[in-house]
Image (cartoon, rainbow, N blue to C red; front, side, top):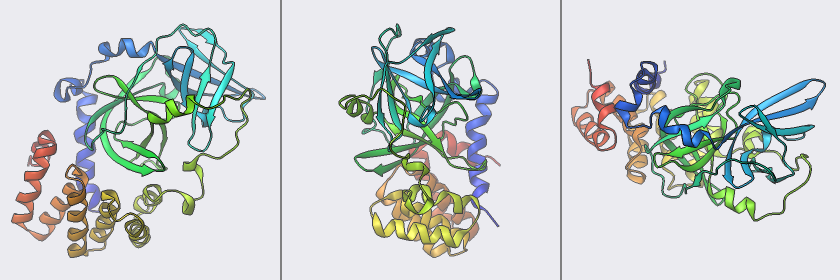
Amino acid sequence: MIRYHTIMNKFIKFLTFPILFGIHQASFAYPAQAELFGLSESMVHVWVTYGDGVTGTGSGVVIKENHVATDCHVFADSKGVNVVKTFKKYVPIAVYADWKHDLCILQFDDLPLPAVKIGTSKNLQYENKVFALTFPNDSPIPLPSYGKIKGLHPFEDSHIIRTSAAFTVGSSGGALFDLDFNLIGITTFKSPGKRLGYFYALPSEWIMELLNTTPQLDLVSTDAPFWSLPDNEKPFFMQVIMPMQQEDWIKMKDIASAWVDSAESDADAWYFLGLAHFQMDDYAQATSSLQKSFSLNNRHLDSLMQLYEIAKVENDSELSEWTVSNMRKIDPEYVEYILKP
């Protein structure tokens, strides 16, 4: 039994239906593709060679004159890397590398491309609208993907950004923008599996910090990306995803409980704990945890969505009305969608 997916599947359809039928921008005030032409000039296709004819690709974004930000794993330990724009190849002369955070900046001496505006991720809020520009599946042009901020996970000195703006193979190193066209993140990794994908970006603050370091002249990595570590060494926000996808609610509850113990003020920790309790039919504990999540972050729509499911299961009209009222404050369009018969 996995009732969690009932409302989540409806949420996914709510996000994807307008895209498929070409009305997403009109309905949600996202920029039309024509408006993205200027940004596209700052996006580059990253090409990598590994020897023996093996190649790879990724995405990159110009963040200052002659500098392209991307993910280190796109080219780590490769034989060579270059970027391509309008069929012209540019070879970097050095690389600024933060291998642990998986953020790299390629330095050039002849890259005639404009830089994007670098914003800050510090002022982001859950459910803010965002969009990604990447080169998915070897697309010859950068393509947009629209979504919202779904998580801001504290990590070391900043936050890892989780969004519903989906990306796929070839999108690593791409750009995540707010609606003012400010670069707020670098698209980096997604959760394993095909169900309910979780998409993560590195914060833009790390870019400027990296530029203050000394570049290296080779592509040899010195550390593994934090997201590729063994499961028990990953951050809790990553550890809970696989048990959720595998419907292992006991393991998910144990991980979420440990997360709550280590970060009692983290709304996402309480949300995943509440979700696990719900799937185990412990509605009282689920309600308590989810309400705690919402009390810590009054824009945590996912917690409200799950409370709404509990209200339906328990036939609790008071909880239902309270939940719907608070969801309307965050995303009235979505509320009208889920209330349709």
